[in-house]
Image (tube, rainbow, N blue to C red):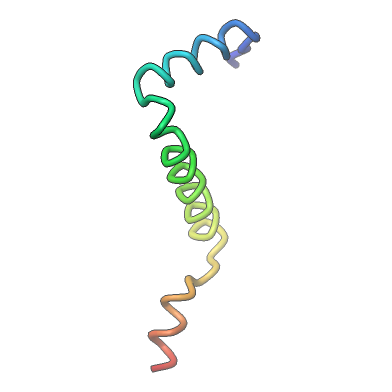
Length: 57
């Protein structure tokens, strides 16, 4: 589909650094990681820990 070469990846990284800045980059990465983790859980049907605690009470 899309083939990204090394120059395209470097350009994307530079643009992201310009837009978000180096201080906010770890927060952005953490947020994206949590999004994919939650998305994977919802697709696979695994219950959240919070849901199980509410059922036990």
